[in-house]
Image: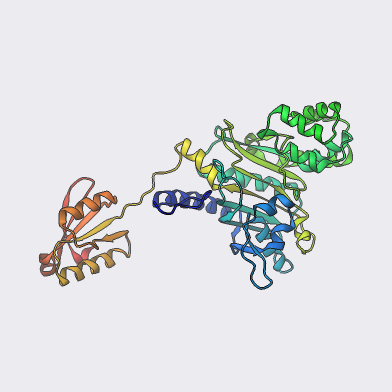
Length: 416
């Protein structure tokens, strides 16, 4: 084979696309039930916008386009950035809160891994205009419902929940100054060994006492054990506890995990990630509060929160759990003309057109023999075959054969 798909991308064959469409529609219906509206943005954005909220790391991951004139463009790497831009464009006229979602593809130039591609799809849900804890609770509740909408249960996944203000306050309370660098290492905890974690912290000049105390804090599950908090940590603890109290029956799917940092620096409060119970895969979903991004991009200060679900990793889990439905790719009727005759071919096309008003219909395009047409109809999963010949032209009666039970019946064309 001369050409192959680009590394880190995938081809979507009919059965793959059917599974994707099922996931997409499940997410779409769930988001709409929460009052969210669907939006769409261009695949490309101004490079300056894409680089605005991140540092060098994300800049290296952006697929940049060839510079034309004075325009420098890049392919979007998430949907939060373009949706924030869209919000700012109509910020003053939109009733708040603004509740949007999008399901689309994006690109990141990085080493492909299982469940992580260079071209990938996500559901992205964003809410602009409310800083209340019930907003975070609703966002988390929606994320849980989206995962349940594709058949997952509490036995399959759970949500790790934390608060950036709480984590930052706890780190500062240990006398640690380079908080952002420490958070970046905490964000990698699940991917490195405990020895590597300690080594990384030592490189940042943390003392052994600080490292030990930080490790104890990160492993704390009971929030009541957190004592002597500074003002920032107390604020974060109140925010976190408020969200937990508002989750209702969704609380059973949520666990406090103070090691969840969501390495992206723009998060300002509640942060969360969804994982499979066995810990076999990357995060299924992730999100949190980002109250400073709108202002960073030139808009009026506006609180915001949201989350994203990646299709690639979730698809792996659904396949493992055998939750992906078998796609129905077959047609209801296959119309089989049995003679190379202009009148027969014309009538076969008319019958197919008539049936397509209410059914999925295919029509022979190869002028094959009737046995070969039946063989093809079986292979494509047709439910019925309508045989059209010269006698049909004369009588207006067709023979319909059900390929599931083998039964045949004759009907008037006008009755189809």
